[in-house]
Image (cartoon, rainbow, N blue to C red; front, side, top):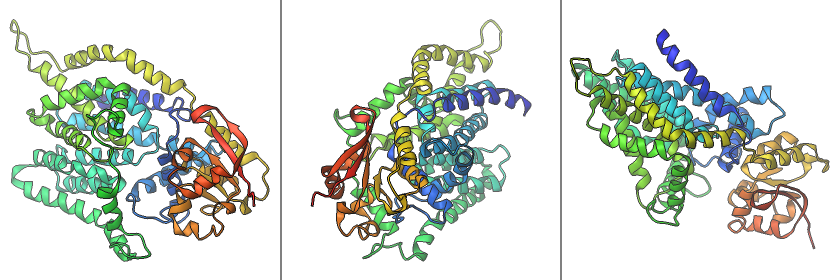
Length: 495
């Protein structure tokens, strides 16, 4: 155990340090971050969402965020809300990194090789940026790694396999798309269980998974929101929309599609781990001990490459730990299987680390440039200035005013004294939530201010009330310039 600390501690320290430096300055905030942070705020105040909860995702992800976000909120009250939320994600990244090492050891990797996999995971520019953002996928990955660690437990206790099922269920309840890894967990459990008790292990795993996941539809059933119907949201209705009603991202192989642009961006940020890990996964499938990690990469790749499906920006987070494990694991396998020479023993697993180090030399300049940019860039000054304007500018009685913001600034406006929900309004809800539209009998004329961010400007053609607000808004403050600027618009009623 002491030797494990020797390998894990420095890698963990490096990973957390590089994720902390510049965490509030880069990357530019995503509206999803503000949404999940606001929903976590709602959990802390006794609800499941800051508006009508419509089963867009299971709520466990932002419940966990609520449990983590109170500390930076309490210790660092002067920071913008999204920065406090990003700080709350650091323990999640740390725990996931440790689990990568644990899984590496349970896949039969030597300590140096497992630490090398953890280091690849810690330094990948994709991981550095996406781990500091407030995404449900980060919670889901943490739990699916815990499930894999339980499934591969060398002690083979039944409760370990039940815990694997529960952990996988918690991953699905954090972000439902992680459910595609269920077959991978079954393979890992098959390999990690004893043949004489395998049926009990599978039964325990299945029971833990099903009984835990059922809490979600049971909640919807008790609320009368399981089946679609008039006048209420529903779990199955939203599931139907997510699976078939949502606009797809196109094919990653077709130039000009959202999926192609996203895949190109991933490769631009880190071609070495993506390509190297994918090739390693293909070669590692026949290697029994590496098969669970390799299959995880292949399953996630097949889902991403399907034509016409929806591919979100943060999807790659789910594959990163398995890419690191297969790359490091295959290097050790190839080195240790070299033939004996001149009566000498085969090279020790440390040689695998040497192979990985040589590969890292090729990747180091690119990774250094990307990670340095993440630590030193400042893309978010406009959000800091806009949050400061909401807090400091005298505009009258904020409890009586109405301001429209994007998801990122919503909680900052609440902290500044605007009424949650109908005083500060998330722009998506202007035309899409009856609970909000009922409070706007005169439409856009009932709004006093709009904080115009890139997210708002990108949606104004799809939301009629938002479009009207832009048509009748006069800038009273501007932060930044170009497409990334933020304008504060005062709404004028020409009539």
